Image (cartoon, one colour):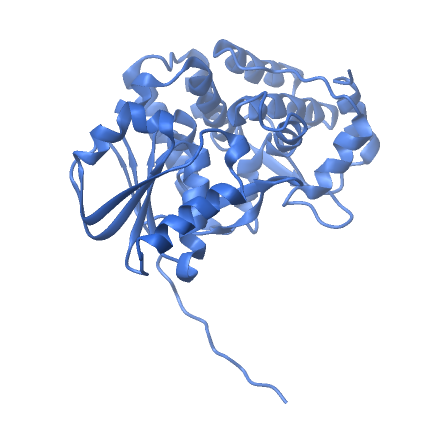
Length: 348
C-alpha cells in the first residue's frame, strides 16, 4: 500500500542583483537588520537613511568566523521571537560573508522560512558569498556543515562600502575573484593579470564579471548537484586549513588562496595544468599580498579531514581542480598517494 503526493511544480526563486549606489528600499513589514559592531559603527547610519519599513530593529552579533555558530544563530532567532516577527517579516544581512551566511540560515529556519535581503559590505561577500543562496554555520567538525539553500529576495552591492575595507579583507575578496576566473573564464583571468583592482572603475568591472559568472552557474545548478560544485575550487583544502587554525589565523579568502595554490600543484602533478599556468595564478595572488603557503602539522590527519567535505562521500573525496586556465574538473578517483605526495610538500 502506498500514497503518492504529487509535488512537482516550478518555484521561481529568481532575484535581482543591483551593483550601484544604494537608493531607497521601501519595505512594508517588520524588518530586522542583522550586522556586527564594526560594520554598524562604520555604515549603519548610511543604511538607515535608505531603508523604510513598518517597524525596524537592529540585531548585532560578534564579528568573526569563530562566531559563525549556533550561539549567534540563537541570538538572531530570539530577537525575532521577542519582536513577534511573522512569515511576512524580512531580515537584512548587512555585513560580510559570515553575516550573510548566518542571516540566510536564520531566515531559512525561522517559522520554516522567511525572506531576507543581502547587502554585502566586503569585497568577498559582494563577488561571491551574497549570491547563490548558500547559508549556514560552522561547528566543531568543519565549516558550513550545517545550513540550507535559501535564496535572497534581492542583493544590493554598493561599492561605497569598500572605501573602509582593510587591506587583508580586500585581498580575501580578490582570491574569490581569481577563483571564478581560473575555473570559468580564461579571458577574465587574463584581464586580472594586468588589471589594477585598486582602481575603482577596474574593480567595479571585476565585481560585475564575477557576479555574472556566479549567477550563470547558480542558474544552471541552484543546489550544487553538479556544475556549481566547481565554484569550490581551492575550498576543499581551505576548509581544512581554517578548521585546523580555529578560524583565527586566516580570513576565508586567504585560506582559499592557499587552497588554490595546493590544488594547482595537484593539478600539475596529474597533468591537468602546466607549471607555467600555476605560476601565473600564483603571481596574481601574490600581487595582492595573499598568503600562498601553509605548514601541515600532520599530513594524514589533514587528508582524513577531507572526508568531512560536503562534496565527498563515504569512501571517496571529490577534488575540484583547474583544467588549465578557464576550465575545471571534478574528480573523485584521485589516488591517495598522489594527494599525500602534494601535501608532504607542505609538511612542517
